[in-house]
Length: 315
Image (cartoon, rainbow, N blue to C red; front, side, top):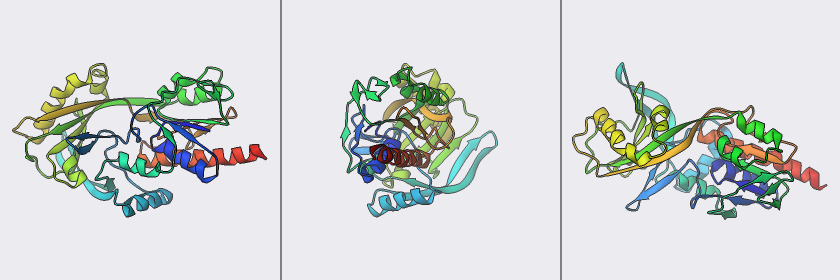
């Protein structure tokens, strides 16, 4: 049994299979676990580059969050963000947003602690059988954005190909901006509405709880689409937009831009996952709202469905 992708959906799926006594190998093309719950260290300090936070309204996912909290990996951050827009600046109340002092990737690492994960392993083909890069397996799961999954699928896998083809994704750039000092007003995080460049800005020092003078800005899909080939070249424009929004007098001393070609699903499939008669499963937050919780539930539900099928097939 092979799961391709070590984001939270792939890890949740693999954990369910392991609990059912089914051996699983997780293959991840990157050096780190986490997928879009990505963090990168700058002078030893992590900053979240992907998902900005997570929210919880599923009782089962709440148990997972309780486990992270007991391990000291997560903390409630805020239930109020700021919204900037044509009407000005206003507070927006909402659900509690949870943040991770060591970066959101640490949450996925904690879930994957009992899994066999093969890093720097780029899967090239998934063919009928199913066969992963020519190797036969009982079943295979693609836990990644649909456009990436489509590149691996043999056209003969018609059902899976159709399932991933229904997904639509938007892109984004995420910029880490470290300043000499904290000069911005208290805002924690801000939705930026109607802006040609910015969509979300988070106070990473507040989010992480260490008061570091670090902001993380996420761009609009439209701006990102024009800078996917050279994302680093967009750094100065993002910095200028953030400084203008918050009225910052000093330039950033560090600007790092990360490209997310497939940042957010805008349309996906029905249900919480795809599983077909060819033994191919697809999981991720394209099945439902684009949330960390949705990705976890997709992987969990697919893992349970696969475990039931494989146990039945072995009888």
